[in-house]
Amino acid sequence: MNEKQVVSASKFLSLILRHKPETVGIELDENGWANVDTLLSKMAEHGKPITMDELGFVVETNDKQRFAFSADRTSIRANQGHSIDVNLELQELTPPEFLYHGTATRNLDSIKEFGLTKQQRHHVHLSEDQAVAHSVGQRYGKPIVLVIQALEMQQQGHTFYRSNNGVWLTDQVPVQHITNL
Image (cartoon, rainbow, N blue to C red):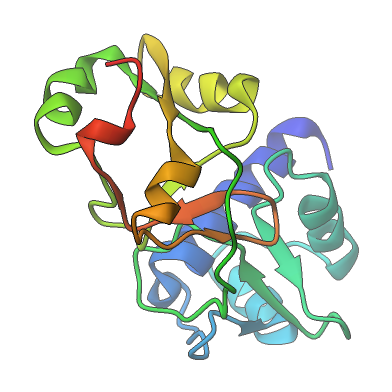
């Protein structure tokens, strides 16, 4: 697969495994898993054929590690970012003192008023790495990296999880826990 094909396959997998499995006529189980053979068959039926080896390449080389195989590689799911109801079986964890959130500067007025909210997703996504947060913010316009007082939030009763690909997740970030607004 060339780079363009990998990106295209990754975007299509995100659509199916995070947002609209019905696009290709599959169902995810309650934990977001899809049967790999069914997925490959349905992708081919919908004009997006890839082989098991190509799927493995997409999963293993995705820069954000968006997808994961089950231990026996018969199932696949997105690690986070779902807009559909799934239980990712995440364990509550104590976050580091600070986490980072990348966004576009055009979103600052809303963030100053409401904080960070999950909107159509299950959680607000945070990173331990400022550079990663910056690259996320760039996808939405002129980027800004917000500094989140994560440990203080957790000490005040907010719950944090970390997905399999290292993204920190929480339900919301109140304005008072964003240090550089």
